[in-house]
Length: 162
Ligand code: SF4
Ligand code: SF4
Image (tube, rainbow, N blue to C red; front, side, top):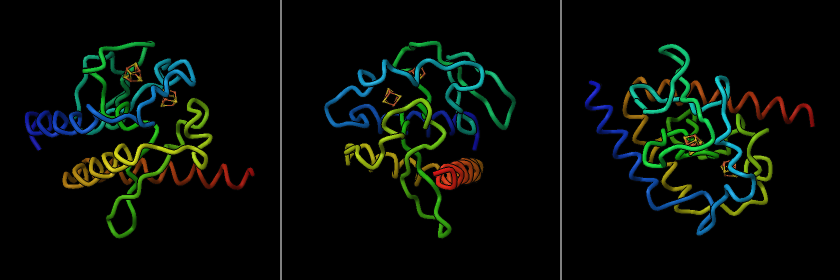
């Protein structure tokens, strides 16, 4: 995909999250003091392939991290922020399963209490659709698989630790 095709795709994906939030009608940031906004050079929002941002970026081509400093222009949020704390995990048959993003376990109460949280069905559906659209691009499909493996490994580790 060219840079302008990526820009167009991400603009469309961002719009999917204009009218939905993880908890229907609630600002989950009030639960945690917007904990996911307090990133640093190791814990910001990972950019997807071909995604650009006005936030500061660290890392190299494969792993570019947008660094969150506690606030931002909401219109400029990267995709990882818009879908957090869920992730469109790739199934062996290529389908998408929406999972809590285990990478956010220490930060996000919605990940830690996933079984008890009633997520907005619309938000979950949009995360799934986002994964389906991303999967059409080979680089994004590989990225989704890579992060899916990370999330599954973290879940296994947490399960084995009890
Ligand atoms: S850390 Fe979780 S609960 Fe807090 S604002 Fe971010 S997504 Fe919402
Ligand atoms: S991109 Fe903005 S809203 Fe999203 S976590 Fe970072 S600072 Fe917070």
